[in-house]
Length: 406
Image 1 (cartoon, helix red, strand yellow):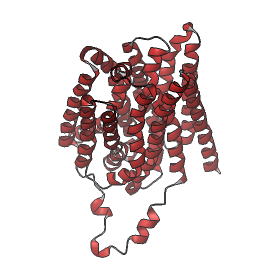
Image 2 (tube, rainbow, N blue to C red):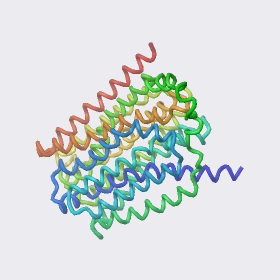
Image 3 (cartoon, rainbow, N blue to C red):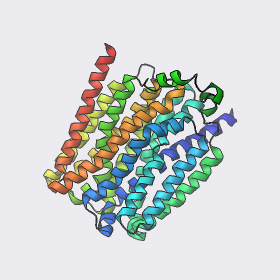
Image 4 (cartoon, rainbow, N blue to C red):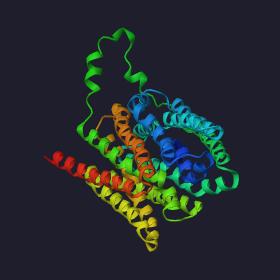
């Protein structure tokens, strides 16, 4: 009995760390944004383009890498994801200018895009069905754990050591996690032997393969669209909330960085909670999604209101709490629902479709908010666009639920 529990705990740590290391660079730069912008002389749009580049690369490659995650071994995937994150951080720390920084963000996107399909596949292979949604929620909380650590530590490290040295500290942590993952992950994570026919039988599977690829359920496509809409708002806030708190509300660098830490801390708990709700047999992903989109919209309204009067600046904290409770937990619902909608051998590809939608939203969010900030000199228009996206997601969930019931 104890033998089975210990590998479970180790596997959970690997899954959570895999989700955490990919976005760590983006979260750390966001937490230190006033320092990075001042040191490199960047505009708001240029800073937003860093995160946009990462998520654009991830969105472009999500479906293809989702299929690779169904075939490659777990250790190979770990080297790609952790190694890519470490290399991107090294390039960032050594970047002499903006062009090299953009290249680092490209590598970061390539390294982290496999995280969702790879970890989802491991869960499907090694976790009993009644516990999969809970495991999904815990490992998805790795993204917010990364954000929490970045918000709490990187502003202070950046002030003490410089932002480049702070990034180098993260490289050491990522490499240690890679070593742990290499020795503990079950290395039977491959679909190639079972799914790939012998060369002599190559003509026979052709109709099967062509029939299987288009079979993406409509619900999966709806969840991918919802992920895109909420991803835009979630990542816009993740990237620009510290800068917004610093410039628009007058918080110092450390306190401004703490806003995303509050969101991340709540996001960890909310992802686990919503995952447990999704564990229930009667849980309806579209109903949950509609409620979460409205909660995210309420968070955005508070961000719009906060700068209107000095006495309202405190509303940034409840806004951060709502952001973590709603917007940051949407991915748990859409991923869990997408896993339910397909058989085991299609989990990676299905997750890849949803991941593509999620990263498309992640890509657009910082670019839209950064561009509007530079054009207008105010965060208000950008937050208004985010509000429209959240309300659009709520409407999409209601329509999809109505169609499913018919």
